[in-house]
Length: 120
Image (cartoon, rainbow, N blue to C red):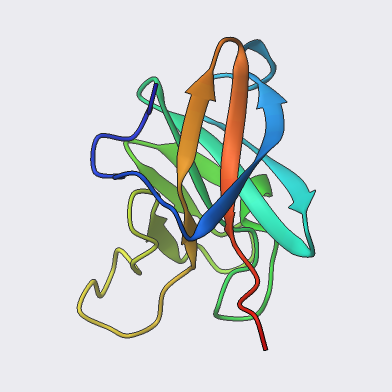
């Protein structure tokens, strides 16, 4: 079962348990480390999202920011990022954005996909 409608099957990702469904409340974020990635896991309007936990402006932890209506506001300088695609909400055409990660819901687990390592 996939919680994000815009996320297709991702064969280039390995999915890892990140949290239990009941651990994340609506309007909340938490930081998780998976395979060297620091990921902000969020719930907004009963949807789950995973983006880089680092604000691209100055590196603040986005998981500590204010979450509402599919956006997270950086706790340091109030920059807002869309949770569905990582775009800077104040300037969505800007190349400045947060990396996003696909999510799967399996039973009571939130799984986050991180890119598979490519053979060298």
